[in-house]
Image (cartoon, rainbow, N blue to C red):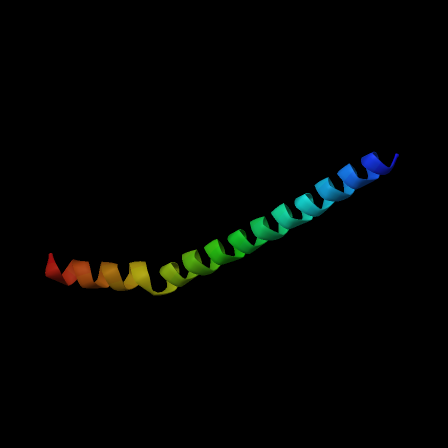
Length: 52
């Protein structure tokens, strides 16, 4: 009985850690993508069109 509880507790904590890391990764990716959309591609397109 104690082994089952410890295994469940270990799996539960690993699950929470993996979910937390996944959410953190998603937030970072969203920040990077939105930052690039706001700054990078528009400036690059504006820079490239007059050069062509």
